[in-house]
Image 1 (cartoon, rainbow, N blue to C red):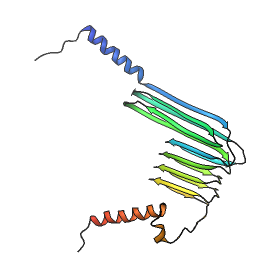
Image 2 (spheres, helix red, strand yellow):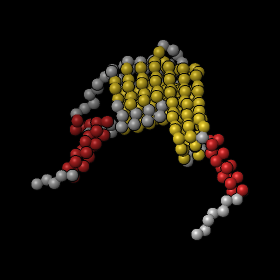
Image 3 (cartoon, one colour):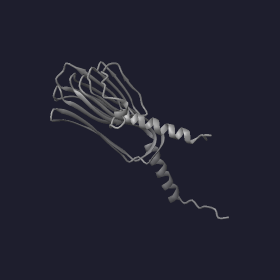
Image 4 (cartoon, rainbow, N blue to C red):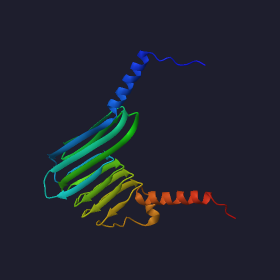
Length: 219
């Protein structure tokens, strides 16, 4: 049998590798913070794009927007790679745009990873919302403009929002609304041919029934 031979050089190299790993095996906190006011039209639109955030949006009598963002990533253990994170916030034609940028090159981790990510917005009560994101929770209060959500795996709660234009595209989540208006857009037969939530729900129901029947033999 061939026995391995350990030289002082190989032992020293192994020691340096372990030392490097132990240097990375510590608690790392990556914090991103923002807390400031931004100009926008009292009837402008908040355009938010985010992921994995707890978002709270409140309408008030103010004429501008107050943006508060806090994100902290805590890692304990050995991490291979790095992450870059930023949020661009700017006024555009009376609207306020918040766009998240995350570039992760983490290829492996041994240990513990925790992320706390909160976005708190205070906006004019007459503002509108266009929200895109995934894996988050959204609470909206007292916003009376049009409200549109396009989110995946998220929960949405609206309270005190008395507008009449709500649009939702949601996968794997819940929507709770305590106000709003029900509008009659036509008979079910006509709605089944028009793009919108009614046609989508009808399609999902038909496809679901087809898949259910495929599992049974009909005599």
